[in-house]
Image (tube, rainbow, N blue to C red; front, side, top):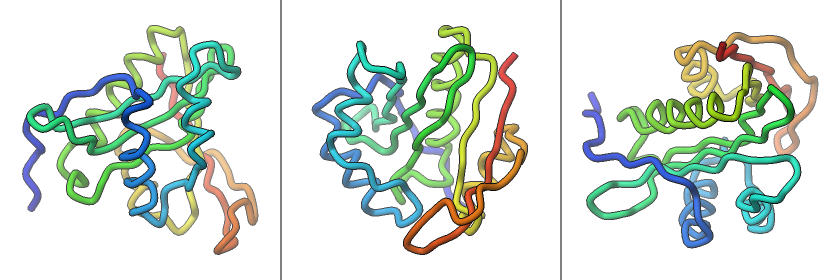
Length: 158
C-alpha cells in the first residue's frame, strides 16, 4: 500500500519546469510525448486556445512530481495531458493536481471537461472514472504506435 505523498504543492507551470515535465512524460509510455515547443506554447498567456498548465511538486525539495495541461474554449475545457512520475503514483498526487485544475477551470467559468485516453490505458481510465468522468464514445484508430482507439470521457463541473 502506498502512503499519501506528504507536502505536495500545486502551482502554475513555468519554463524552469519544462525539462522535468518532459522527463516525466518520457518515463511513462502512456503519456503524450509532446515536443518542447508544445509545452512552451501552453505557457503563453496570450496563446490560443487559452491554457492552464499546472505542476505538483514536493514542497520540501521543489522536485516536480506531476503536471497537467488543459485548453479552454468557451465554457468547455479539454484535459490535454496529465502525468505523475512513478514515485508519486497512487499517493494522491494526481488527485490533488486534478482538484487544483478544477478550481482553476471554475474560476475561468468552465462547465465541462473532456479528455481522451488510449483504450488500453486501463489505470488512467479507472482514475478518471473515480474522479467522476463518464465514457462518451470512441475515436477508432486515433492513436499511432501502436494504433488503437481513443476513449472519450467527460465530466460536468457545474
